[in-house]
Amino acid sequence: MEAILEIRFVTEKGWTVLPGLLHQHIRDRYGEPTDLPLAAIPDEVRRGEASLTHRPLAAFEGDGFQIRFGPRVLSLIVSSEYPGWSAVESELGWLLDRVAEAGFIVEGFLELAWRDGDGKAIQIEFGSKESEIFIESSGEEFTFPNDQLDEAISRHFAN
Image (cartoon, rainbow, N blue to C red; front, side, top):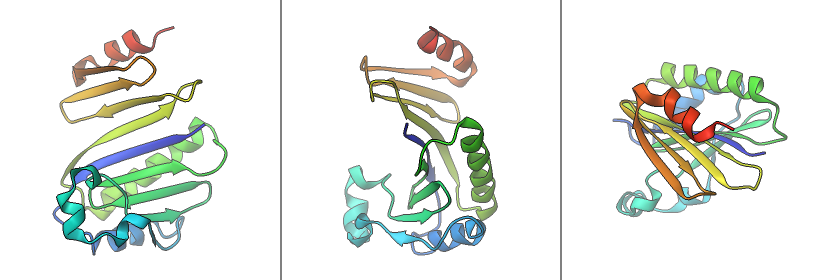
């Protein structure tokens, strides 16, 4: 099972300082950042290509988890055998606390993504006022106000 939490955000900080800002808050669990292949593309080219906006440029390796980080995205990835929800939830809570301490996010939203039993993607994107559900197996995509979150999840995921 693959599990990824993605945070997309807006920041006023430049990419050159962001990895250091994050690393000082996560270094007790994660190693030094390593560049991903997209980091070799010049900033001006990346900024001009919309498909690269939310792509990571660096990775931090931890025990069973990996953090991928870019100028407008941060992802927590289970990098080994799925340890169960309680371990993922604990690491996620810890990471969100460290991101808040780092203080570089001006605004953003959360995205949860996983794969169903057939390997098809399911995504829920949580925004400040509305959220979106995408179910790859049926091609359905739904947007709804956050005050209707419980109802929408029950409607689309009830057995």
